[in-house]
Length: 181
Image (cartoon, rainbow, N blue to C red; front, top):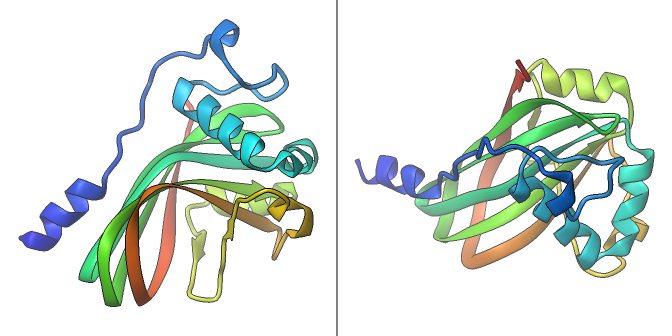
């Protein structure tokens, strides 16, 4: 029961508002269908202008404006986002994660996953895509993107929103993709 309450507290909802290019901080070649996604893209670029090369050169990307994570021995995370192929919104995705190990606290972060090519994006869209313990994300700070590279066709960046989480746990992120209607 407590675990269910913990996970529900981690959840962030996906908004369904329309994109207004006049109010977006995202350039026209990278449209975002809602203000949270546009703000997330702008925040990553502001934190590290080198992120632009990933937007310019990737085949596609998934933007998760808010991922909530919490745990006390057993934990979890959840977030919703949007998936873009060559700059076009093509669908939606969710992140779920269950963790087990020494951990306490909660945090919120934003995440962008870049796909180097069509094959990498297609694997993600098949909903067979997940990160195991061996995968790592780059925390975005000034200059972080200049040293980052794709690993198995994927590059992952995170930007903290807030909170504190102490953990030494085993986890994997699982993604579920839903095509845009």
